[in-house]
Length: 83
Image (tube, rainbow, N blue to C red; front, side, top):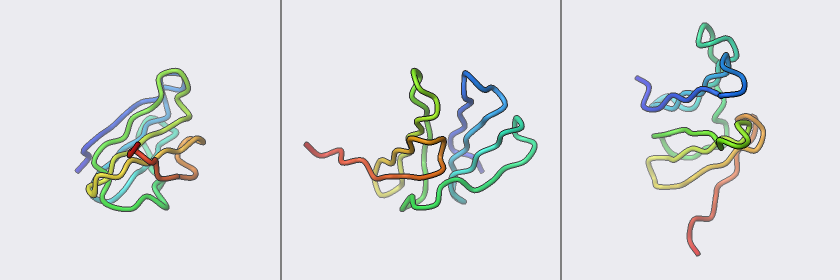
């Protein structure tokens, strides 16, 4: 079950999905998918893109943590959301 799906506005065939099984990326409009959430802790609840730089992907996990990928979900870093 997908909880969140987002399409890259610059590359419409690139789609990201977040759900109980993790984060996935498709480069062919959803025909095939590959795992793209290695390093993200917790169950991904949502995924979104930076509208000005779609290769920058953000995810929120079930434990409340926020994650950032600067490279199209190839690598992830936890975001410090506390001041």
